Image (cartoon, helix red, strand yellow):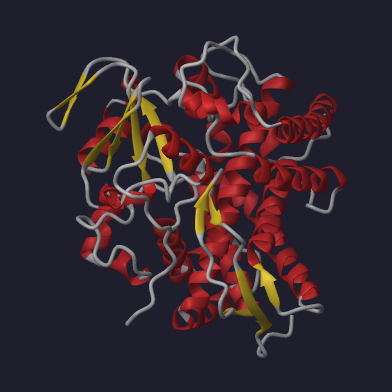
Length: 458
C-alpha cells in the first residue's frame, strides 16, 4: 500500500462552541470535521455570526474573481495580525487596498523577476553552504529551520540588498521566529464582536516581538529613504516600491506606511516560502524516485541565468504539488456586504465566507488521488482542470498574491539547488504532524537525514 503524506486528524462531527474555539486557536486544520473534504458548502453557527465554508469551484470563483468587492476581506482575521502588520495591504479593503496595490504591483511585474533572480541565486547558494556546515555536526536536520533561513535570506537580498548575515536582518529573522511561536492564528475578537475601543488581549510576548520587528524594519526603511534622497539607493524591490508614485493620487508610501508593507512582505514572502520548501523536501524524502529526477534536472544549474528556470519543469511540478497538499495559507476569510443566496441558502450581510485552500486542494469530488503525492498529475486532464478551478495557493482574482510569480521562481530554484547538492531521507519514527498557525507548518518540525551527494564537489 502506498504511503500517503501526513494529514491532520479531524475533530468529531459535533463539538461545543467553546471546544471549537480552543481547537481553532491551537490548529485550524484538526478543528474541522471530515465532511469538509467532500462538501460543496458547510455552515457553522455561533451566537454572534454565521460562517460558511465554500468548496464548490463556482462559489470560489464568485467570491474571489467575479464579485470580490462584494466579499471584502474579513477583519476578524485581521485582529490577530494587526500588531505586526499594521495597515498593510494584507489587511486593508476598498480604496486603501487599491491604492496600496497600485504602488506595490509594479515592483513584482514579470520583467522585475529577472532583476531579482541574481539575489535569489546567491541566497540559494548560501543555503547550500550553511547546510554543508551544519552537517559537520549531525546528519539529522530540522529542515524547517534551514528553509526559513533560506527564505528570509531571499527576502532581505531582494528587498534591501543585504544578506541574512547583516546584523539587522539577522535580528529580524530571530525575532520573527519568536513571533511564530507566540502568535495563535486567530485572536479572541475573531469569535466575539468586541467594540473597537476594547483591548484585543494579544499575548504579551506577541506584542513585544511584533514591536521589536517593526522597530528594526523602521530602521531599515528610514535608512533606505535617506539613500533614495541622496541618490545612492540600490535598484532593489524596496527602492522600486518607495519611489513608485500612485498614478491616481500622486502619492508615495511614507516611511510608516512602508514599514507596514515590509512586514507583510516578510510574513508572506518568508513564512509561506519556508513552509512550502520544507514540505517539498519531506515529500521528496518520501519519494526518492522523484528526488532523483529533480537532482538530474538540477544539473542545469551552472550559471545564474534566469533562462534556467525553463529547464526546471520537474522541480516546478513538485513545488506545485507541495502547494496543493500543504498550501501555506490554508484558509481565506471574506465577509458578505449584502444579502446573498448561495446554494439555496439565504446568507445575511456580515456572514463569514471561508475559502479553504486546504480542503479545496484535497477535495474528494474534484481531484484524482487527492491525498497522494503525484507531481505528474499536472500534466493530466484532471490536473489541468483542477489547476484552473480548484488550485488557489496564492488566492485568486483581484486579491491574488502579488508575489505569486516571485514564489514560483524562488521555490523551484532553492529546491533544485538543495537537491542537487544533498540527498534527503526520512527519519524513522519522526513523521511530521501538520498544524496551522500563521501558516501550515509541522507541530514538532520536519526532521530529515541529510547527506551530501557524492557526485557533487562544489
